[in-house]
Length: 92
Image (tube, rainbow, N blue to C red; front, side, top):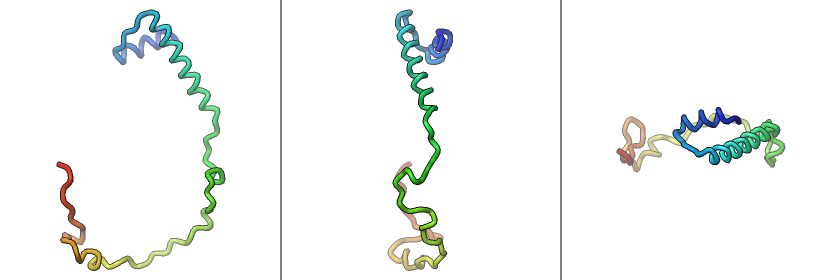
């Protein structure tokens, strides 16, 4: 990072540094940018064999639609409106 970029960032964020503070900040910002550049070196492609997932996608059961529980039975102890649950307002 150069001093002009640091001055631009300081102007945008309304920060004022002395000359010594600018030099220190310039060194710290350069270190941060170098650290961020090292992160680019890591391979971040997903591999499901590395996350200790013992169940493969082929081992999952087939998704077969089935009848659901009757709505009338679920709402027998409630005050439904238009086949929906009515809950008290929590926030204004």
